Length: 114
Length: 113
Image 1 (tube, chains in turn yellow, red):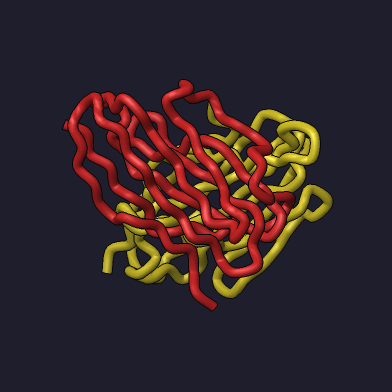
Image 2: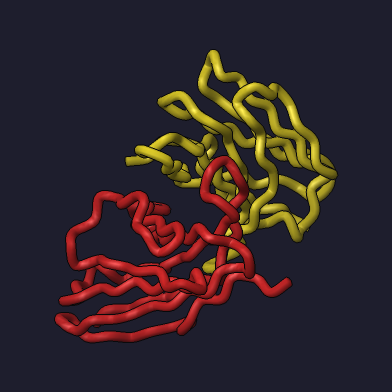
């Protein structure tokens, strides 16, 4: 079952604009991560935010986490055509003794138009 | 540092056959996880191995199995293939599998005909 749900499912913007994607989850988490996937390829890790953090930056990326609302957002500023990809949030939840499971949402498909 | 390597990249199999996929993690990483990605179900967790032991298993039938070797390389096997097993199979490695980022391979695209 999906732990995270991204919103919107698809987003189309002009190059130079900002893109915001949201993620909601259901259970308590250890951390939340965002990944990017170019068409049919492997996932690339973007950023990890721990449950006791509220905001994190990495280059043009800004991630916020609100554990009271069980939600996170990913902001990409000054988007480029190369940012066109699917973006997934993943929650790291305890799955059993000594084990954690990374559970992904269905992703937001971002299209940046040159 | 070499990334995660998955082989083969593409496979076409017939219903009823079995298939073995291979994953070589990043050197020093002891945790290897497998995921199935389909357009309908998205990314679904299959299982995680750490130091040759399966630590966690997703909700998949027993036809899906895996193992990890002493050098942390992992294989997954799917027996009695069904059309619905057509998917992109992704392998991810991490240092411990706990609260750390995962590094993904490029995946194996399996098509069952």
